[in-house]
Length: 247
Image (cartoon, rainbow, N blue to C red; front, side, top):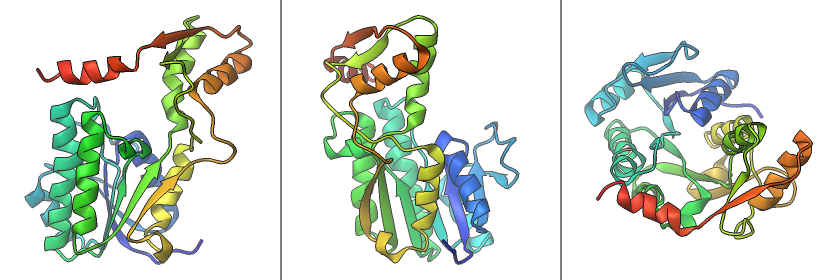
């Protein structure tokens, strides 16, 4: 696809999907503005700019670099309530306000498919910002990937150490079509130019049929030549961990 060159502010450039999106933006010929917090590992991001990540600092950077669009890949690292509302909602909200104040024309948000049934703090925070973005006077795209292949890497490491594959519940409650980091990054970047992606919520996944966590585990065991072993974790444990983290 041919892209019109734009000056794009990329938030969350040091994250897994953020790094892939940084590479996709550079490959597409865009001018990348990548603010990062002081001390963050940006050794592989030559266009990174130290930034306080506050609304005034982001607004100043947008003005200085004549920013035309924002792609936000930011996400709280642990998902607990305080961090989720500060990052998934608060930092996105500050960036949106700065964008509107500087007449930026477009905002692309990386969300998650799980916000459809928000039970955890990070899901509620993302969904709250989704609503804010949809009501804002700016062209928007909300991308909800079903799952990342990256999320399986921790499980793979467990299996290589001889440990069982962790399942919430029976492992059959959900099914998804995982998408690779690079494919997701390219999809985020194409939202900048594809009018069909604007002012829409966009579920996106990889090719093939949807697979359950149990099926994912079975595939990994086969690939490693091991006998399948699963450990079942109660679904309620996730909610309990979220609640206890901010009591």
